Length: 621
Image 1 (cartoon, helix red, strand yellow):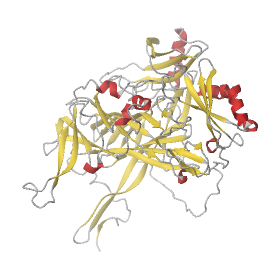
Image 2: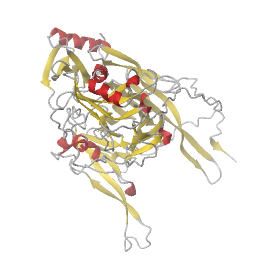
Image 3: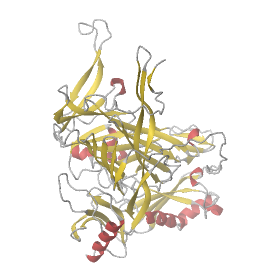
Image 4: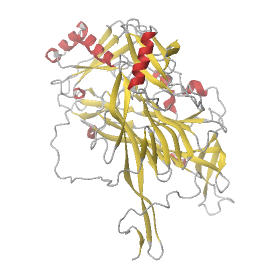
């Protein structure tokens, strides 16, 4: 088998070989399942790293789980340890298991009959949902909750017909119902939520994107070069899309960039929703739920696709043929000026787009990384899909949910993403500075009242670097090189530019606050440690909290002239509206990293005009 680059995603051959090693060493039984299979990325500076794979092995008969690392080169197990607190991500087969346990429950069937829904049991959809953590004595081990939705047939969208107040609590290991809650008796909303059979409008004319000479990027395996940029594209079952060794004009910018976690907390007190706080990476796996993308729908233009392989519940490789899409797209004007004599120069912007999309239950998440011709990096998260709803009598004034269709109420909630940015601005020795714009009081320094300036605050330790965005101060965070200066004698730098949004709205006493503490700040910073990868810890599923960023940063380690990792939290706080039904238009969120003194002048002065008759430049009126 061909030896991949150390940072490449796992191949089908590697997944097969790793599983065989586990079998040969007696690690597998008939009840062994594989909640997560991930590449073990090499330590920085390791010139000849061994390709290793971490297998999380779950014994479904006992609920015991352990992490086992396999060396593919040595064909042996190199470490094995119990998983400890928290549960591994859910198996796909556990979704079906939860549904079958629910439908076999006499208490659930009695609740359906009491509500007059006995004739609709056949097509009922029993949604399997992560339970959060509440320390209940009967909820230990591997627990999941199930909410019931109705369908007219197997192809019907269930999310329009919630059976309000019916909650089934399930022990997956013992394959039994812990208890059934049957709260209230609200009519099931009757209006369907189908959206794919709406007649298409005929007024839109086609848009064609052509590149007759082909794209400007070059691809060698998973390495990409494009207009001064060089990087490696990666993918794993937990995070999905990852980017590695990003450089611009042969100078390092980022060692690694990814979205290792997100949390979706709900703000409703109803019995069927107060516990909802999904960790879509740690509980469900973003990569394992990655889409096979389609030309003309998910991606438009001249496309290069990267395949990815993930392990199924039994550890066998499954291909996502088009897991990652890459293409170029026009992005309007990059720079323009019209001189006093009327002579105009204008150049158009272009960006390289690298994207993936994951579907977790009712929601779909797109992760779009953009590289620009001026040296800017941007991440845009796109949330779409179907909002999660409950039921109440139409016209009810609900303090935590909006009526979006007759009798259908969608609760307030948040989608809080956490990007992990292993920065390397002209090398691995970087420092962090907060930059605020501030007013100058009237007086000697501001005699006319018009003056304002900027203030630089070094963030020297982890506790100092726990920060909130502040749009009133145009706040940015600057990452400065300790190894290089520009021609003006200043450290070369990049700025993290947030798009300010709400942080976690839950109260500090809540369990979701303890589990998702990472989402209470817009910025965290840590010195690089190989084992510090996930902001809510290794296993947020059923974890009591405190793991990840709050635990690491409590040490208050030094951040000056060191190998920095930034953790940036962003994302929408959603008060659903009727326009979000029956399928939600994309809600955009994200941030950018822009060069600030990294370059000595505009790096895009040499762009061609892009017009065959040159009417975009050197134009006399």
